[in-house]
Image (tube, rainbow, N blue to C red; front, side, top):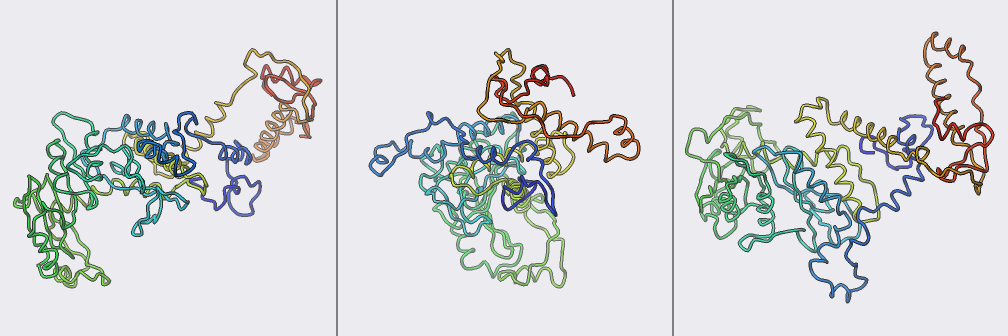
Length: 471
């Protein structure tokens, strides 16, 4: 359903279409079975869930820890298993990013967030640590209860504590360290100082606020951001954290614990585009370009590294948006389940490309994945005829078609279709075989009590079914 988009899931089970494909899922599962699966699906055992309050009085009696888990416990143990597997099978690169993921949901829930400036305006918020689209760790967030499973640090904000908590989970590798890339929603001087003490580098843009932030950079941003020449750099060190201001279209403020501004390696030459005419703050930058649409310019290494490595979570969002399997549902935890399935497929694709076991694109990987899953579903079907039983003849409440006759007719029909589609040789073989006409299967009022299927009593279907002779 992620590869082939349809407005209504019932379309996947249509028998004939004047234009468009007939989907393979209908040969493996009926529409009624799929709808029953959606209706009765549960991830967690009801006995493991905390008691849900029916009114405000019952809610006040529950502990805070229980209330904070009520909205995501229905996804356990799926989420924790997926998170543990993501960390077990992959070691991130040196540069990783932490950002938020929005999972679309417009139902009634006090745990969803509204973010008008995001592509997904409303839904569940998930904080993730990712490497080029591979989500290595994540934590859920609620508008009502805050960040789930958070270990709060007394010196940091909740988001800063969450970043520090994720950073400490990264594998400890001798003579190596990680670098976190963050946007201005997470960054602060105290957080970067604590990450530096943990031997973890950090880079990110920041906002002109906070007691520790240099007053010089705040003043430049508020009063001089349109008066400085393009490329002007101002830097101040606070608690071993480099606070940087760089004049582009506007004064860009950032924090870093791995960069400098006074060495030759602090600058790098990149091809830059002429600012768009619709930009209101690009007067300073246009002077540098003149009449050229593109020009080679020196920019700080801090800016270049941020532009190339901050997209770890954004790539995961892009992969998911193209082949999203989410469908409209009334249960509030269904969007999180679909996100977990989609991200698991993305992580598998990234593992295959990194391990050089897959050289094609994302679409081809998705097609190969669902094809193998459908084939596997046939292998794991219960084969009750192999069991010792007891296999006894019994009368059934309704008269139904014999399953062995149906299986024989299906094989004959497939063989006939294959030979008719061939050229002259295939049709000659079909004439030599002299296959009988494919009629309606026999019906029976009886069958096997153990296998719970209808079978013919007089045509040998009982023996053939339980011995599984070839047709």
